[in-house]
Length: 557
Image (cartoon, rainbow, N blue to C red; front, side):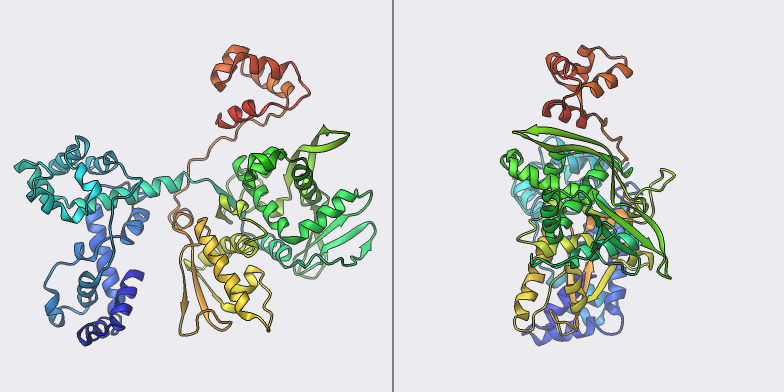
């Protein structure tokens, strides 16, 4: 539908009077909607012939539709468009004016196309599949697939009569596009994500973190009964910090946390909770957190970086969340992140935080995982790359990346697969302050943030309605990225993986190995490490496991 609209709009702006008249006729009444339905029906029939798995078929159909050539959907004499049925007029225009360029997908192998053809029971399809596998159709990888006949006639593709008949029956372009779409769906299913709770309380907390003053000016915070308000009580929640026996490093960390680092650390923590099986409980390690943030090895070894990041995460463990009833009375209080175990390491002459066992407040995670242990129904997927967005260069992309998935989930509850926001509300969602003297700078920041979010897979396409784009009154329609749409709308969830063993020390490793009745040699073989690595770890029961052994355990799912 979107491609059809773009083609008609382009024809409407053409210098050709004939094209403008054709586009005007195509956009009359509900012809575009009818043409889109007709095109999808025709495409669906073609896909049906390939025997695609019914569970993934709707997702494959959507991906294929974005690149399918209209000339493969409509066949006829376009010059006689005035005599066509109303619903075919837009299709004829699209077939004539479609400018989609095609090249062989870089991630698609010949065997992928053969596999799609092999799923059918048609003997012609199996013959074409063999031609892909034995290399007969290899020249197609460096040519336009729709030029198959020219390659056959030129002798570049050597084919006997049987193969020519099979190629006449099965359009190679359609085969390649469909195989590419199915491969993308499978890869998207395996994509690592962040599972965000889409409840109103979590949304309000993220909005409050986003709206904290970012100018780093020192402000006096009221302290009452040993607690300092971080987020003043709003409709549903308040956030406060315990200041009793508060170390100076935590005071400094809270100041930094109030800036954009807080949102980035929260995204990293949500990634770690997701990767640990979405139970709301993790064995937090500083190394894992730095990896989730995307820090390079050099930065991870920097003592200053390690101390700063550890302090900023520790600050969260000292904060308490208060949930309120509509009448303003407190319904529930509890730590944002409860610490059940803590580990430190000596750095120089000071102890530094290295690991903790953390439990997130249930109200911030019940949409992801219910108390019964079942997967929750009120959660939203975000890309794992969100935690790696630079909070200094693209802070507003970070804010949008955390807020939009929740808002899409709410829209989906109303059976709407997109989100519509005015320019003013979009600015608010991104946390951009509009200064009257320089509004252009604010709109530039918004555009750059949306583009950055698209690059990491946190936003699909967006389009402005009406004649006032990039304005406070204008209305912007925002769509989920395709991979997220497939999870939320089509229900294509990845197989639930078993979280890796939660083991941090040599003593815990020895207990885990003995529980499995493995010798040290057997454990080393299963993990793909040397026996000496296992022996050395168990010889130091109080020490943290080395990186090689932790990585081996992480891969053991």
